[in-house]
Structure formats: C-alpha cells, structure tokens
Amino acid sequence: MSRNKINWRVPKGAELTELDKKVLYFQNKGHLVPSRKLIKTPEQIEGIRKSGIINTGVLDLVAQEIHAGMSTAEIDKLVYDYTVSHGAIPAPLNYEGFPKSVCTSINEVVCHGIPSEEEILEEGDIINVDVSTILDGYYSDASRMFIIGKTTPEKEKLVRVAKECLEIGMQAAQPFGFVGDIGNAIEKHAKKNGFSVVRDLCGHGVGLEFHEEPDVEHFGRKGTGMLLVPGMVFTIEPMINMGTWEVFIDEEDGWTVVTEDEKPSAQWEHTFLMTEHGLEILTY
Ligand code: MF3
Ligand code: CO
Image (cartoon, rainbow, N blue to C red; front, top):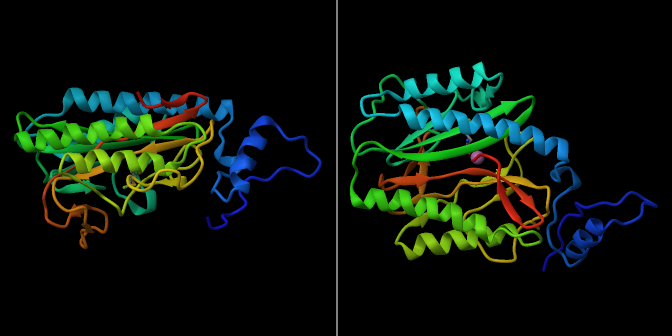
C-alpha cells in the first residue's frame, strides 16, 4: 500500500486517547485517515442537526406542492421563502456563481439543473430536487426524487433502485471501515439492476462548509479510501443512470449535468453522521 498523508497528528507530549490509538493504527498501516477537524464536536453536530431539520422541512414542503404544470422556478421560490423564513440561507444561492436556491434536475439531467420559469413539469417526468441549507454557519444537504403523476415502469425502477443504492451505501458504511466500502456496495446494486453509476460527481464531507473532505465516490473497492471515524459528517448521493455512466456539462449555463446518451438519471441524498454503531441520518 502506498503511503498516505499524515493527517492525524497528536500534539507533542499529549497522552494518546483510545481514538488516537485506533486511528494511528490505520494511519501507520498506510491508510488515508481523516484530519482531526473532520471529526465534529457535539456542538457542531447539534448545529448541523438543526440545519438538517430545516432542510428536511423544505423537502417535505416541495413534496406537498410539486405537481404537473408547475415551473421549476416555482420550486425555487418555495425553497427560498421557506428557508429564509426559518432564519436560514439556501446554500446553492450564489455558490460559485450558481444563480438559484435549489437544484432541479429532470429526466436526463443528472444534477445541478437550474430552476427556470420556462421549465414546466410534465406528467411522467422524474425530477431530483437537491436542497442544501446553512443555519448559523452549519451546512446540511439532501435530495429526493419525485415522480410527476404516472411514469414508465423503467423510470419507476430507476427511481427505486437509486433509493436502494443510497440505503445500501448507508448500511455499508461502518465505523473504522472505509469510504470505498460505500461505493463498492452501491456500484454492485446498480449493476445488478442493469444501471450504471456516474463517476464524475461524488458525495462529500459537509457541515462547516458545503463541500469538505472526503470525496465519497459511489463506486470503488472495499477497504480503500478514507477511514470512517465516529464524528465524521458526510453525504452519500448516488447518481444512477439508465444507460451509460458518462455525462457532460451544458456549455450554455456551465452547470447542468446531462447523461451522454440522454437517457434518464436518478439520485437520492442524505447527510449522515458516523456514530459508534454506523450512520445516523441528519436530514430525515
Ligand atoms: N447540492 C449539491 C450537492 O449535493 C451541490 C450543488 S452546488 C450548486 O453536493 F451550486 F449547484 F448548488
Ligand atoms: Co451533496
């Protein structure tokens, strides 16, 4: 195994805690381990949890209101108004120049779709609504799929399997396991169902910033990638394609990610806390 960065440092003369010993064991074997700042304090976890409650409130509101004939700009307004009226900030708004408060990604759009007055939801569409919230400086991030009216059995299966991929990824993440365990489980489930996994975008650490370490890839090998340590907070957000895994970015807006073959894509996301016993969902 190649030598990885020395992320876990113990101050000179400090007594080693049980956690130090455990993490150092893996680091000394050459594994990538988190830096200390990725281990959230109880106070930080409470902050992220409160942010997550608002984030879930936004998604519940969208679930109630979404319907055929609605524009994605109307979804954006719902998200903005709810978030701001609860004392929070929509994280996407002005994030690296993103112009709206939420990402709305319909059918062959994989992610980062920009809400628009011109884009009207139609019967049979599948749409991902990706909501991220900042409350008192703490970030949360989650997305769901919505089926508009009745869709085809194939698209229904895609939406279901993408959700199962998130759940299976969650089960695969164990304390003192590895990020690669998550992607491995997700990729297997997608392939078994005849679908592919997007490789260009991944989950991520979250909480004090929108995107932190580690990258959480939705494919890969067991026992590889960063060590999972209690106190880490990160998303899992598999993007599952009906056809090829390859994607491109719309040149006109510089954001919208679309499948190369323009077949549909589905994604579900939660923010998770790693505990002593496995993952806890912070965006339920
Ligand atoms: N919410 C996305 C994620 O899951 C990030 C969107 S960035 C934006 O990581 F600028 F497009 F909003
Ligand atoms: Co995310």
